[in-house]
Amino acid sequence: MASTLRRRVRWASDFRVRFEFDSEADALYIRINEGRVERTIELEEDVYADLDAEDRPLGLEFIALAAFDGWMKRHGTLNVPERVTGPESFLSPA
Image (cartoon, rainbow, N blue to C red; front, side, top):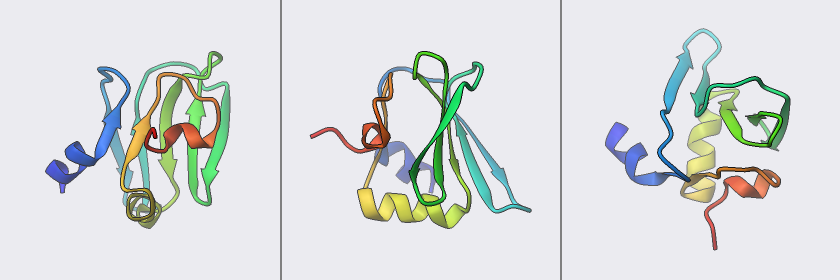
């Protein structure tokens, strides 16, 4: 599965990414950057993005592992922008 993720997840720059899976909660958190979370936006049901004060993504939370699987099936990719202008920022660029 890791090789599939590497091919299908696109990063805006050279991020140090850490995947954290909570097996009790069945939740996946993808830590993109270190920093203080200033706000959280909902990207779609069960999918949230933590942003810093300058709207840089710090992490993505999938409330259930199935939410990550569903995101990938629906969108085919996970685009991680350097700055977030809205939920559409995480979709593949046109």
